[in-house]
Image (tube, rainbow, N blue to C red):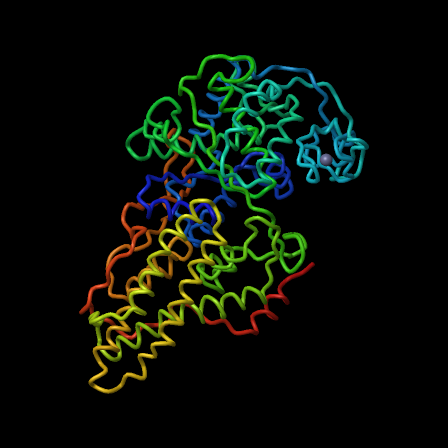
Length: 572
Ligand SMILES: [Zn+2]
C-alpha cells in the first residue's frame, strides 16, 4: 500500500511512474509445500499467484505490471544477470557442505534446519537467515543444527555450488550507501552494519525448482538451480523488461534502468517490510554493481549497460494482530479477500496509512479499526462530504455561486490549498502517516468552518446568497481535500468526484488481464492499467451551477458488534 500511495501521488504531481512487482515463486518452501499437497511447485505457485493478483486488485494497487517469477522472460533476464556477474568474476564455483536428511537421503532445505546463530547466539536461527540479527547464514554455519521436519541432525556432504563474491562489493556498497539521502535512519544504519560483515554467499542449491544455471556444463542438470534470493530481486528488472515488451516498445525499460542513457535521471524506490531490507539495500545493489562492472574486481557492463541502483529503500516495520504475530497456522490472521468481503478497501487503506507500521512495530486491533473507521473516516471526512453536498443539493440543487467571500471564507480556502504543499511534501518523503494526519487536520478545519458558519441557520430568503457562498466554499474545500486524500483513498475519491458532479476518471484503477507468456510458457493473470487520466495534484475550481443530487454515504459506519465477531474468528 505505501508503494501505491507514493506512485499515485507522483503521477498526480506530473511525474512519469513505472510501478512493477510480482509474486516470487521459487524457493524450498514452495517445493516442500507442493510435496506435502501432492502437486507440482508450478501448480502451487499458480494457485497463490492468482489469489495474490486478485487481492492486490481488490485493494486498488495501481501496478503498471504485477507479474510473476516463473515467466520465461524472468528466467532469461536472471540468466543474463548471472552471466554478466560470472564474466566479471563475481561468481565462483566452490565445493561446499550441503545438508541431507540421514533418514530419507534427500536434500534438506535451508529454512527447515534450525540451530544457534554463530553471530548473535540466537537459538532459533534458520539455515538461511537469522531472524534476530538479520544475517544470512548457511546451514553448516549453525551450531547444533536440527531438522525442523523431524528433529534429526542433518548430515553434511560435499557438493559443488556457485558463490557470489559479496566481499568484492564492500567498498562499492559503502561508497554508495554514504551518498544516500533521506533514508529512514534505522534502515541506513542496519544496511551499513550488514555490509561490514559480508561473506561469499552460495547462490545455487541442490534443488529441482528454480532458474537453471546458464553455464555449459550446468544448464541441463536437473538437480542444481539458482537459489530464490538471487532470482527474486532480479524480478524488478525482469518485470520492467516484460512491461516494455508488452507496451510495444521493447526498449522502454531503459528509461527507468539505464544509468548512462535515457534512465540516468530516473529514481528507483523499493518498498518492503524490514525483514527484506538486506535483499534491497545490499544484495540487489551488489548484483547491479557486479553486472555493471563496478566492484573490486572491475569488469565490463553486461549487454544491458550500467544499471541504476536504488535511490531509496523504504522499509516498514512489523504489524502484529491483537498483540500476536500474524500466523496462518494458529489463525492469527485476516486474509485480504475476507477483509474485502466484509469491509471496504479504503477503510483498510485508511487504517494502514494512519496507523500502520511506518517506523515502529504496530498492533492491529479490531477495536482500533472500528474507532478509526467510525470516528475519523466516517464522522470526520465522510460527514463533511455528506453534509455539505446534501445541504447544497437540498437548498440549491447545484453548486451555488461564490458571492462576496468574507475573510473567514478566504482563510479557509487558503488553508486547504496549502495542503497540496504540506501533504505532498510528506508523501514525497515517505512520511505517509504524517501526510494523512495533515490531510485529516485540514478536513477538521473545514468541519469547524461549517459549524462556525452554520449555513443551516440561514433560512430567510434574504440570507440565501450568504448560505450559498458558505456552501460553495465548503464544496470547494471538499473537492480539494478529496484530491489530498486520493492517493490514500482512491475508491472513495472517485465516488466523491462524481457526487460533486464530476465525470470521467478521477482515480484510475488497475485491471486483471489474462495474458500469454511472451516466450511460449503457460498463460497467467497480470495486474496492469492505464493511469494517464485522473486528477492532478493541484486545486481545481468547482463550477457554480453544476447540478448536485442528494448523496449516498460514501463510507460505511460499522456496528461495534464487529469487534466481538472478528475476535471470535481469531485463534491463537
Ligand atoms: Zn543471529
